[in-house]
Length: 547
Image (cartoon, rainbow, N blue to C red; front, side, top):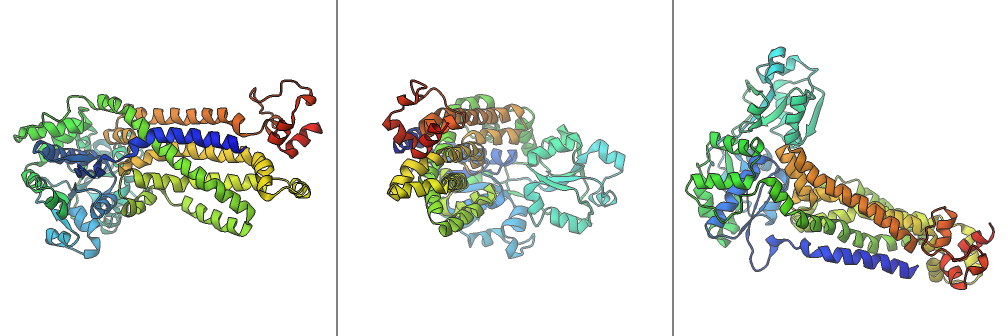
């Protein structure tokens, strides 16, 4: 049994080691230390991130772009922690969300307040991307809805907003209170999905950004904000003040973009990505070219499908690392903890309870919590996956050992077997199906959960899935989802092949799952050797002898 466990652990270790190289985060290279530009998880933010990154590179600064890292709270925490150096944001968001506790008004000196946090802010980039509430033009006309206040006359209408808008103090709560909206059917979803829901009629109205290209494409009208709820959302870049000192090229690049992006220009760039299916990198390069910046050294000639295919190998290695490295730690920690929980019940109740509580924390909340401690990228993703994968292995080990019949333990004690020998020769072999099932559950869960790691820059197949959501592109979604599903199926099949190496033959035979491997050469019980007896454990051999 011990030998078999070593085989499994060695197999997993080799698989994890082969992928560990990809877990090195290039943005944390001690020798290079490039500027890290980040973007939120919607098209316009990614374009702004690409524009700044390419401009920095064109002017000789080392820079990398962390695409679609998530929403405002996540990026703000990453900026304060020093894991990113700059990202695009909006003044209304800064006042109503980031600095909400400061209770600032529209005329406040944001730059002075942000400086106390070690953060700088540019002047406006040249456009105001404020919130609007949009409806399909035909539905709004049929209901006679032209202003946001008209929605109060239709309490039956279902509303859907992006998840961040629902929670923000300057979002749905303020909109609902100022307009006394009675709607009870209000759901949260990814911003890009709201357009599909609006087009299909699943929701009647949603929050949009005034520069969204889809407003025209989906025949959406913006309802009049007749009570002037939404503030100005001037686009700006936030950056770390110490990053500007460390890299002299950052501040000139930021200043170069101030007042250079007008609203029609931003709408056109969004449309080029969302409707014409160009990559954000290509659109950003064309914009820089239009203002006299050559970004010819940036590889933008490939469309986004070609870019995804080109990095498929790297994404696969990264996803494997996200799956198997935490799994190795889960096995190394979860199995001993499960054994300890079975041996000492009081400890077991406490340990299983603690691990169970950790399992209830939403994955996104866990990642946000880990960012101040571990930064963005692989480290918090690996830590989060380790926390989520511990319970199945630990609990299955505990249940497997706890299910060993008492009379078999008493027989082992009567034979004078030590506790360690009894664990190795009797209890672990009998518990091996449960332990293996826990390991398989954790591995399969890791495949799906690892996709969430892309939100904080961990890469993997989740990065392609996010790109599909961002572009409203089913092909991109499938290019990320299908490899993840295939990997889950391969893991299922792989653990089926491992079972004959882990579960003793006699136990598999009694459960009707015995394969060819390790089957005795003859059905005659006299062919069963003494080594077979030891490998199968006295209890299993006894059950076979009494058939």
